[in-house]
Amino acid sequence: MPGTGGSTPSRNGNSTVTRSTLRQQLADALRDEVLAGRLQPGQEFTVKEIADQYGVSATPVREALVDLSAQGLLDAVQHRGFQVHEYSLDDYREMIEARSMVIGGIFRADKDYDTGSRTTTVLAGVRRRGEEARRAATAGDLTVLIGYDLRFWRELSDLFGNPYLADFLHRLLVQAWVCAVQHLRRLPDLRGLLWARHTELVDALARGDAKAAHEIVTGHNTHCLALVERLAAG
Image (tube, rainbow, N blue to C red; front, side, top):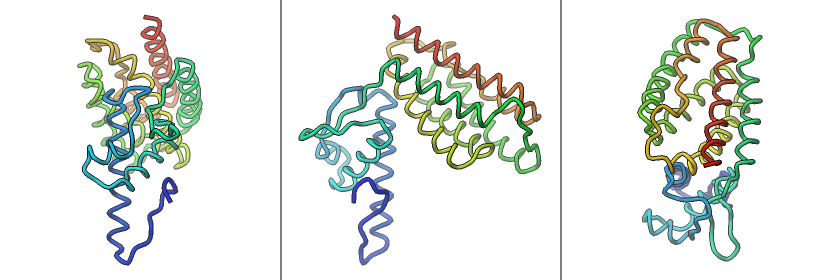
């Protein structure tokens, strides 16, 4: 059944794996189209149009679209197909509030962080993602920044949070980026406007400085909200 996360059983186990993988690949590709602004808020399309575009059958496309609807990125339109969800500025404010609560719960100012060898090893990889995100933010390359930013926060939350918080935070971050993109992509030059303190956060966590880490993530949310509010106001 579409949207349940499973696949129809078949005599060939590889068919099930292939279909499930294709479903996820399509969902990822369409999500990236929304994040890149190539699929605009309110834009409508049918399962057939997407299937033809990617040269695949309708079933995995429909399942991928239902998955994205469950994530809040698409809306099902009766008898017409799907459309990209239109988020408002109030939606964005509520996303930032929720994100602040989740990230604040993970990176509390009074939390004791494990700075052992495993944490150090993982943080070294996360820092590399942070360096790429910082470079992209400084250069104003929004597409590259979004990819590294999502991976950066996912790896950090996996390391310091629990799986449920990590999954919820990832969903919030994707939705917040989708909402922000419609404003950010109207600017011809984003250099110097985007949050770029990824490596500072990693360094604070690496030295076990919970207070500094908390201040940085609080600043991250404040910066993002102020920027989108300013752009929305024209």
